[in-house]
Structures are given as structure tokens and as C-alpha cells.
Image (cartoon, rainbow, N blue to C red; front, side, top):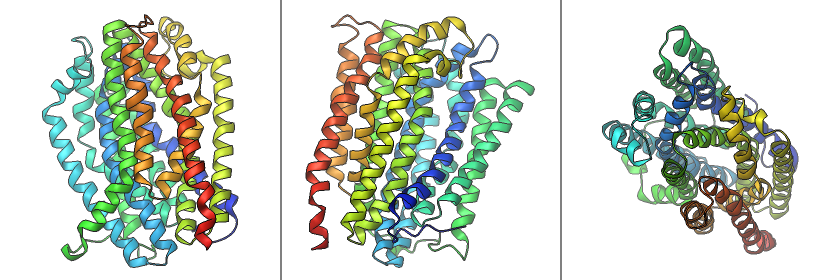
Length: 452
């Protein structure tokens, strides 16, 4: 596999070469859940309820993702910085420390949520009608937790070595498997929601096997190997947790927001609006992929050049991915305003559901362009290991803005169920502007000191 040379001055090429495979990889990764929802939404007589049931599982899935990011996205930037400093031993130690943490945590999470699935789903707002649908899917999905965390958590270490196309291939294997297995298990074998969950588990296992085999290859720069106790040191664990805390909090707060939204919608809108929220969250997952991939693709380039003390290349990297993100989110915003039903029809053929969801989708995405600023600021903070700043702005947008507004707008301000969706554009504007402005003042303008 061809390796990207982060030390070269071809900044745009390096960002694009890293981001494009990630774009494909994340689109393919999204197929794990998106394809499930597309097929489930079309199960005769069960589609709308099935979508609502899966939506109630989102908080648990996001918590698993949060811990995956804690160790994967926490260790990978440190690994890239170590490579920039030509410290291969430390880079490999960081990778294997993260792998050990992923394995141990996956087993604990799987056991915990298997034991408390039903109480958790009730807490998340499940009605007696939706609880059976959610429980069936979640219990099977959880069996693949170790494979999920290995596949997603170790792929950033493949990318950090410059093998972005291999990281893409890892996801491709699982995504295509899921795409093939879903219709067979859901419709041909008549397994419904059980089939969707089982297809995802099998696909994740295949991705995990590929990742492990790739990192065991003699030709690989950093190798996966058992970590001796002497090299599993608290200092490395603390550093990984510190850097990964931002990604962890972003996903964990996504879980919190989903819980609050579903519970509030259950009160003010009922099961129909929980299904609508599931569709909107699915559309967002799909449309967020390019922004995520551009930011993730720029991150190792930024981290490497920071380790190599090259401020001019750092500035070019930030300028490029910020312009690309703003341009993309602006185009998406216009398309949603003009063609909202197009995006909703991806997940359902229920005309009543489409009609109810279309105006809500336009409301939810009204300030989407400001999310690009949030991503740009957060990417810089994470890539440079600025944990406090990254954590603060993640908490600001989700916990300090979205959650209170979600609770206040429907009842006190009289917006009803629509108030839940209005909280998002307000948070995008306030959080995005604050995050980007702070990054520009405290980081971007100070980088000349690196070369001194």
C-alpha cells in the first residue's frame, strides 16, 4: 500500500490524499447503520416502529463509539507526533497501549449493557410499543462490541502511518459484507430487526480481522504485538486519555443529547417524532461524513508538522480544510432547503412520515454552515493535544447549549416538539463562532514561535 509522505511541502496533496480515502472509509462505515435503517424502514407494517426502536438504541451505540474514540483518536495523534519526531519505539508503544485499552473496555461495555438493556431503553424514552423493537436489535448488536471497537479504534493508527487507503479497505470489507447480508437476513430469511443486527456484527468482525492482520504484517511500519507490563506505563495511558477525551466527550454528549431529545419528544410528540428524529439523525450521519473525513484527514498532517515544527505547513493545512468544510456545508444547507423530501425518502416510503419530517429537517439544518467552524476549531485543538480547549467547546455546544434548549423550548417557550429540533441551529451558530474564534486567536496566530 502506498504511504503518504507527511514531511513533504505538498500540503493540499497530503490533506486530500489522507482525507479522500477517509471519506470513502467513513461512507462505507456509515453503511453499517444506514443500510440497516434503509431496509428496516421498509419492513411491511413494522418500518416506522422499527426506525423508532433503532433510534432508541443510538445512545448505547454512541457510548461504545465514545470509548472507541477515547483510545483510538486519543492514541493516533500522539502516534503521528512521535513519528514526526522519528521516535518509532514510542509510536509503536502508544499504538499497542491503545489496543490493550480497547480490548479491555469492549468486554466491560458488552457485559454491562447486555445486563441492563431493558432499563436503559426505558430511561431513553422507550414506550411499551417501541421497547420490543429496540431490545431485539440492541442485544444482538452488543455481541459485536469488541470487533466494533477494534475495527474503528485501530484504523486511525493505520492512517497515522500514512496508509489511508488500507484504512479505507478495512471499512470497505465490513461495509460491503453488511450491504450483502442485510437484505438476505432481514427479508429472505425473515429475521427482521434481528437480521439487521446480526449482519452488522458479522461485518464488524470481518473488518476487525483485516485491521489486526494488517498491523501484524512485517512490512508495516508499526506492529501490533503484546505489550510487556514494563511498557504499559501510566504516563502513556494518561496522555492517550487526555488527547482522546475530546472525542470521547463529543460522542458521549451526543449520547446525552439523544437521550434528552428522545425523552422530550416522547412527551411532546410521541413515537412518531422519535421516528422522525431517527431519520434526521440518520441524514445528519450521512451528511456529516465529508466534514468528518476532511477534518480527520487533515489531523495527522497537522500533528506531524507540529511535531516537525513547521508552522507554515500547519497554517496551509488549517486554511485548506476550513475552506473545504465551509464550502461543503453551505452547499448542503441549500440542497436541504430546496429538496428536504429527497433526503427523508432514503429511509422511509411512508408518505405521512415524509410529510411530517420535511419541515423539521429544514429547521434542524438551518445553521449547518456554522458547524464547519466548530469542526475546524476542534480539529486543531485535538491534533495539537489541546485537551482543555477541545473539551470545553465540545461541552459548550452540546451540554451547555443544546440540552438546556431542548428542555426549555418545547414547554416553557411553547414550541412543542419542534423546539427539540430548533436547539440544533442555535447551538451550531453560537458554538461554531466561539470555537473557531478562540482557535484563531490562541493557536493559529501563535505558530510563528514554533520555528524560533
